[in-house]
Image (tube, rainbow, N blue to C red):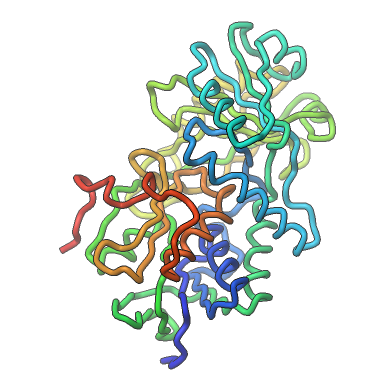
Length: 393
């Protein structure tokens, strides 16, 4: 079907970043189309699952700057949905000396006016006896942090996009994007037209960009969501005061050397503890072809669970796959295509973009509408990868 309608913006990919972009556009009264290759809901990309951590705390000040408005918009989404999406159970960040990550994190959180407590090792283990850390370790506690109900939040964004007047087309794969003043978007079901296109295709980003003579230096990782059985599950519930948490590893090993987890939520009696890393895969369609590639990660996690917790079985009860799309510096891409200024790219969210989706959606919308972005986009520009970015020609 060849539609003669011209949308203000077509968003390609209805994960959390694309859905937040669509919601923002539709809330502004723009004629917006959101196209998703899979039938919704699905677990094929990076936005599925029940929980994601939310926090202000990052050692990067540019990421921290996105969080106050992200929390504000999530609250608006929550009110419109009529259900609680944010669970402010606290967010604990734990690190061994010399405390590089959490020192920067605490300063950045306080800089945006949020509370951030520092707990010495003895205080940490006294307050949270479920953990087992040496006295030399230290932690920060963000009382306003915690987690978001991810699947419910994603559906709320999509529902509200439609309520605001947006058009959502799922089960419709984008086959080709043809640049022009009016862009043609050829899909498995139709040809759409739009003044601008926003591409938020997650692990499929380079497949869509290749015909547009651009390849981003991103890697697709198979990552694991792991669930573990405590001997006394009640101690690990939000109701008992158990927080969301991050255990930072050796900084010299990079941005993906830490463990994170949640109070018991998804599965009755099971604690979610995961490693923020994965195994490289050549194609997102091959995510589950060889599950053994992530065995090293499970082995590391077993060791961590065994040493860092009191009373948790160090054998995972449930393991589920997910995917990250990771840039070399673990920072996002929020920019225009170098050759087509009405094609906007949101990519490389590197396993920590869910919480910031409302502001990411606002920024991508502003670029698509040729408005001045509300944030400094220097850290997110494509040109920072100048020596790595490849033409597909």
